[in-house]
Image 1: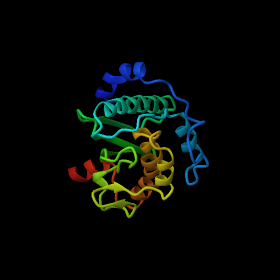
Image 2: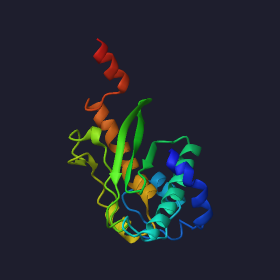
Image 3: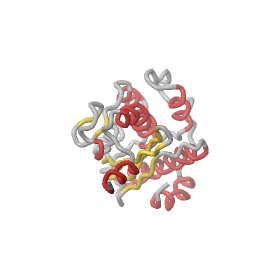
Amino acid sequence: MVSNIKKRELEAQQQTPNQSTKSTIRGSTMEGWDPSTKSTLTQIPLLSTKAGPRDGAAWTQRLKEEYRSLIAYTSMNKSKDNDWFRIAANADGTRWTGKCWYVHNLLKYEFDLQFDIPVTYPSTAPEIELPQLDGKTQKMYRGGKICLTVHFKPLWAKNCPRFGIAHALCLGLAPWLAAEVPILVDSGMVKHKDDTASASES
């Protein structure tokens, strides 16, 4: 993971108790997601502290749980040779930025990734933004905010405060990239960086 997550890894592991995941996810039928996503979700550690950015010490505890969950998710992805994002937070954990990528036809397409933590988090999920793709697909709101499946909000609500940033990436961004990037590439809306470089040199 990125540097600030690495720095807090040991602390998060020491102070946040292990929690089961598979038995406590609500709405487990998870209509609208493929079996791989469902399987991955059940392996991401759940969170327990219901706190947002304005909740002081409780928010600090929530962030520790977020880091623990993100570290576990990233490690899981790496073990499956499916590493696909890097993110880092600002000092108070309210603004997250990084990169995400998707491989299509053996080519890696990389995008800037960013989102803010809502004041009403975790009751409200973060709105994930890919600013480079703003205006290039109908499955996106103004500002590059990805359009999530209709099944996302109900499942998130049922699992508040258990779901965190890692779960939002797994349930929201990963399926979106898998569905949209191939279409964007095949339609010519997104070019591979090597193609862009070749065009500028010619």
